[in-house]
Image (spheres, rainbow, N blue to C red):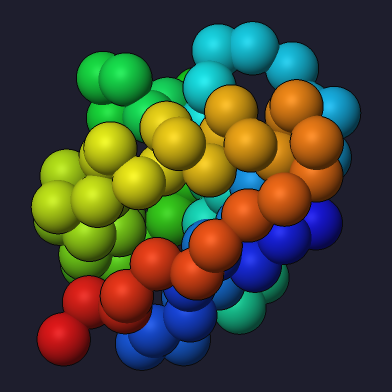
Length: 86
């Protein structure tokens, strides 16, 4: 599972050969959520509200990079890191 970014205790990743719709995984302590890249909705799981807000803020800033990574990972397993939220 490619780790795209890590900040404030969150790990953002996209899994190889994952299912549609395009999404990313956010891990935070014992919590995990799958978030749609296109409309930034939670598809599965949950996060503390503050963490979810920060993850959504980051994703909104990096939506194009997330979509490009999704395509690359699914196509040939390549990916690039995305800047963390600062």
